[in-house]
Length: 407
Image 1: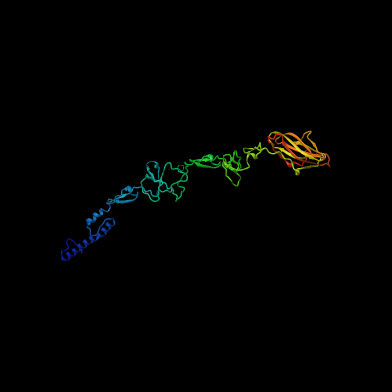
Image 2: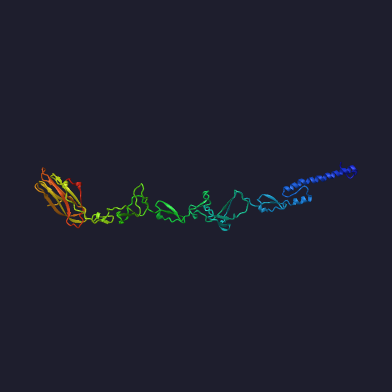
């Protein structure tokens, strides 16, 4: 029924009104349950049994404990603080590359920790980004460090990578070589290196081939091992004993040679600075097996000698002949001189002898022939001696031309 001003106040109607009031009261109480639950969901403790005044107070407290400011909220985002909606103003720098060009001034606050890890990690660089905003995992900070260049980092060291991770193209690989002492004179020509950050081109001659020794000396250590020859080749690079050939090494020496001594070297001769003291014997008389037999009617070289002693000295040339109609003569350097011949006979030996002034390098030939083709002549005991025993008198016999025609 509908209540109006004219509705009679009968017991039935009053009872209905009471029921209606009771139902309305219950509906109001039931409505507090979802309200209190909503308040609880917003972080405030609330219950359906709370009075409306209590619930109202708790609703007012929902955003009172939030303290965010607009500059602390990402731009474009909103929130409620103190019962009011706010809009964020903080720049969103997620995924950006942030560059700061003031790295060498106030933004770098500290550099420390060098050597703490002992693995080439280096130290730590502390700096202020110089910007404000929201960053995420994809944000990159580019902090300039003035003077951080490869030429100020020691060669072999890398800034920005440890020994485990290696060094990629994005890291600073050092090229500075301040502790090197390389000089051009110690680098083989055609090669180069770096020292103190500068390229050094080699000037050391490459002598990886046969090079004459320009300095040498000999020395006898006196221990019976023999005299040593020390050689000092020209300055340069030598590969040592390699397949390409022989090479000398500075201040090296050949094994000692016990026979390398003055008494084994002829007087007037010198071998690597050792002057000879020996005066050799004269060419000795020949034995029977050294007899020359001639039957040619033209001159044939029976004996040839070469004078090896320095200077000009007087020598005695002599030989013995036997046989009918044999003629013996002497030729110096192929030239015949008058009144120098001797004739043999078939009854006795004829000793031939003459003196000549001979010079080093002179060739002395004793030549023989027979007057008749039926004749034979023999020659032996040929020798050359020096009239002055105190002077060098080395003479060499040359058999290569003996028995050949003399012009």
